Every structure is written in C-alpha cells, then in structure tokens.
Image (tube, rainbow, N blue to C red; front, side, top):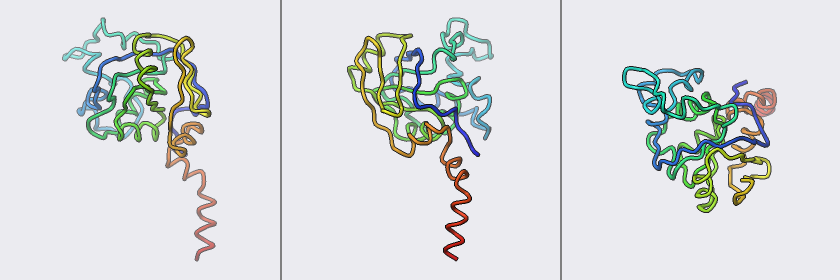
Length: 195
C-alpha cells in the first residue's frame, strides 16, 4: 500500500511561524534537488537555501536548523504559501522534515492539492485567526481534522474546509494510490462482473 504520513483525526502541536509572504515551491525545495523520485531524505534539503551557506555549511542562526519538529509539527506561513511551480517534492520535503499541517490565510491551489495528497494538511485560516497565529509563535494548537476545527487556546478558534476525499486519506494515512490499492479486490470483482 502506498502510504503518506501517519493518519490522524486530531493533531496537537506547537506552531512554527514563517511569516514571509509568497513563499514559493523553489524556496521550499530548490529545483536542483528534484532529481529523486523518493520522498525519503528530502527533509534534509527543505528550505535549503535558507538553512545552509552556498558552500554547504549550516547557518547557525537559522531557527529551522535547531527546530524540534517532534514538538513543532504545524507550520504557520505568510499569505500565498506554496506559490510557483507545481512540484510535488515540496510537500514531500515538508513531511519528511516533520511538518503535518500548514496554516496560512492563502495557500496556492496546486500546492494545496499536492499537500493533501501527500500527508500534509493544508488549512486556510480566516484573517483574524491567521493574524493572531503570526503574532504568537510557538503556541499550542489543536487541529480536529474530523470536525474540521482549529483550537488556538487563547486565540480565535475557527473551522476550515477540506475536500472530503482528501480528508479521508489524511485521516487514514494513505495517498490516493494507497486508497485504490486497498480496494483491488473490490475493483477486480467489479471488472469481473462487467465481463
């Protein structure tokens, strides 16, 4: 079965705020790292040009390099996150790094679709909630995927939209191919009945 990240109905985590607007897929994972078809190891190069010097040395002052992603699985990004080219490697890299959800006031359509298909929950927040999140880094947030609700604790909680099939796949921890592979017996029976 083709799987994405571990499925979840609820996710409680601290946030990591990246307030820049218009973070494009080339910033998430530069084009020179798109030569692989494996998802594994891409977390090492996520936001590569922000995290490393041109000679490859780690930038000691870059917060991402010391981030505990076991505690910070929710990325809060500025407006228009994931714009640019439609590379599927971008959500692969974010997921391999450890993020399970991205919250922004605007997420590029293609990135949003690719993220949901690859284990990253993309959440578009209303402006008031997004502004609050941007102003409060490293806060505990609970995402109830089943109820499609985000609880910000002391901030303004809100509901979010997600396509039903994407929601199902995220909750089950499978991508669309994994969903189909799990139903091969049913597909074979349907095909046999038609012939």
